Image (cartoon, rainbow, N blue to C red; front, side, top):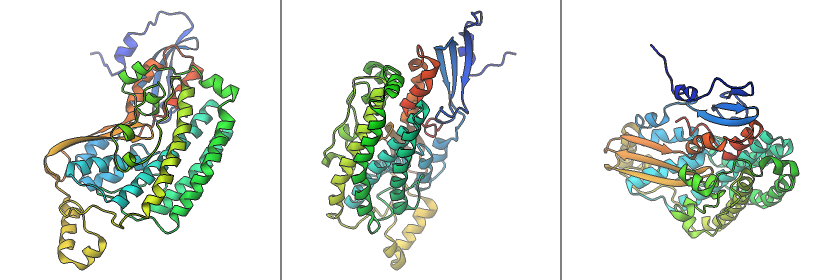
Length: 408
């Protein structure tokens, strides 16, 4: 009896009668530059990659199946563990999809706070990308500088919700907390310091001849190929396609804000690096517009929908009906109407969307997460062919993948 696995077709197509220059290399799944539990099976002709097979599944936790066995509110903290570098983006994407299913909208103050947190989280994620990508390529100083600013941004997240990495800072129907006293002032100080820090990163890297030699014309993907492979976010805009869900299908307050969508027609790793730098500048611009909006809002943080959302704590503690309703929602879960939704959002890595099918029960009949890193990992089987082994680490870094959202 012949034993086969998913790699059998790959190995059957390899030519084992070859010269001494041909070899098979396993890159990962414990390689420090794999950005997670990625196993890359590479066929090399000398140092040239002739075939690449990304093998995933080493981090699989069955998160989508967990969602179908947990009530809607129970599952929300689990979304932190998808893209754990930008957990607020995952919290929000899921909460937003459930809100569409319920037909409710968060109060304006909650929308202001959410949009602030989303863009602050985008800066945190982009700083992490810059630090690790630079370290992969060999730039140690940038790693230290970028992590310094990321720590300050994470201090702001901790001041708001008490957590630094897995935030759970969004709720279905709004946000759990108002901004603490002095938080906006601290946020403004951080934003005022960031342009000079971004200029420092650019001064260290943008015209650095070693950096340019390692990134220019490396990992080239055309706009057509990017679309065919399902690329989104910087991977798509770095290939000359101007597409950002915050502009195409605005959600929260993005339709009221002024910001630009940076696009590059370089199609290589260097162009993608430049876009990440520009996106941080746009996130600063967005948050600065949101700060004055906060003071013009009513202090309501959660949507008023007693059938689905618990009443404020003051009502639960003083009104018997509100307490009974809260007890039912916590112990049995909400029961959304029968239907299905797919809601896309623009996470720091690309299009992050949740598909939910409801049968009117407290548990989703089917939940599917459309994560950008999954598509960008599949792209590696084409993107790496024809490159040198030394460029593999650079290309993986420029895709900015995280395996929490690949192995769902």
